[in-house]
Amino acid sequence: MAKVKHAVASKRRRKKTLKQAKGYVGGRGKLYRTAKETARRALAYSYRDRKVKKRDFRSLWIARINAACRGHGIKYSEFISGLKKAGIALDRKSLAGLAVSSKTAFKKLISIAKGGEK
Image 1 (cartoon, rainbow, N blue to C red):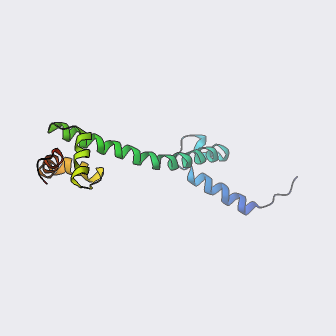
Image 2 (cartoon, one colour):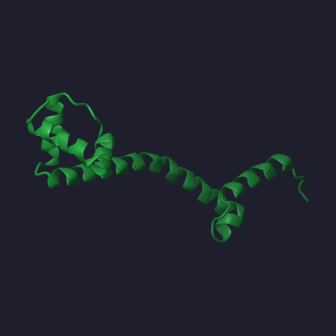
Image 3 (spheres, rainbow, N blue to C red):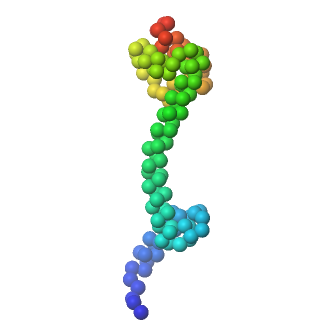
């Protein structure tokens, strides 16, 4: 029989991996090897999707701004271009918030972007 070495460290490592895989279905949460593979893959997905989340939110904000602009008879690209020419530096997150919550302020921005007033 072979002598077991590093038992404490091995057990600690396995417990850590199984704790990460807690809640996974079937062997993915119970068996060390599959739990290790699944937990590693989950960490890779979470790293990747932190970047994807930023992309998704930006496209959501653009869609909201575009919908609000179209309601006032202006295209999204014309609106953004008009704001840049007017020297208004608002990011898309705040513009989308104004489009959803404060319609009057957004209407004012649209009139500025159209070149009506400053």
